[in-house]
Image (cartoon, rainbow, N blue to C red; front, top):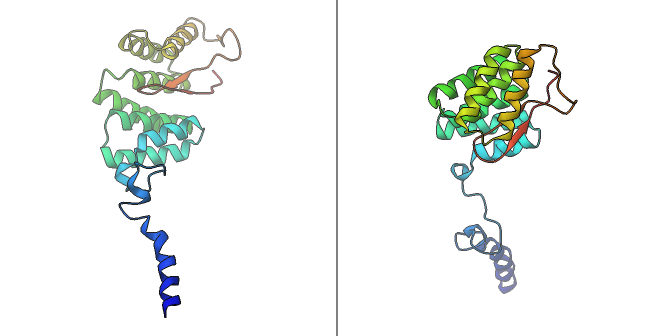
Length: 185
């Protein structure tokens, strides 16, 4: 009987570490355990997936974030950017326009809308959108500046393909980080 009690105790003892005072506490040397989906930032996960080139998974994470936070400028811009990378230009344009309607000062959303418009061949409108994004950003983003420069060059000469093969339009997001958009323009 004592042996059986000891066996049960040895099996249950490690499980005690998983209680609130154990591994899930998060302030010890162990990584915190799952604390619930509410603590998972879908935008952050989506941004990481976008950077890794996992656009479909990023879209799923952004949609989860929209479910948690609502359809705000950040979530709409992120959803639009993921749709752009998936080649869904119409959906991307609609979401990015909604984002700029909600927050007309959101430079990253304007920039990403400009990238969509360039891919749709709407070069004059794209150049104006990039100009607006650059002004809202106070010229702080090299990516937005480069996108504006490329759009203006393409506007002046539709056959313009860039100074070198590495010139490409770039998506940006609010906060640090850029997404590189590979385009045949």
